[in-house]
Image (cartoon, rainbow, N blue to C red; front, side, top):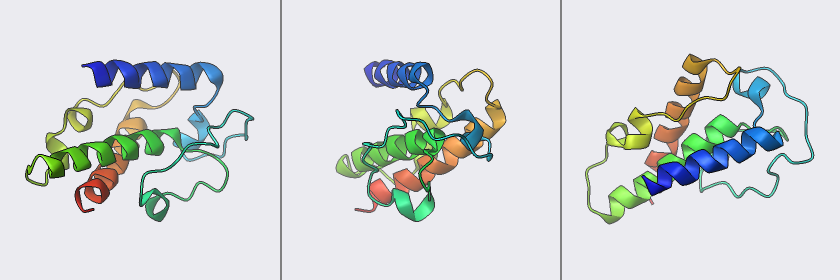
Length: 122
């Protein structure tokens, strides 16, 4: 529950500060902004699946990072490989206003599964 609250707070900050690139998440180019999270450190393997070329894909970033963390956690607890069992896979966070929910869910879950796989297979 605490992780969900932290994640939602981070999402709210990203939306309010313009760090969320809605157009890019929908597959259309979004303008570059000064506060585009350029200091973000991608979890290992992110670049193999997502080439951003200067425009952050916040949906993929958040899904991949959540999946990577969950995969590492499951590995450390000797759990079976199963990205779809995770709460953050099943209960995808709310999408920002104006962003197509179906596109958000599909992109988030795909990124989560990639991140989970990478985190689980250290």
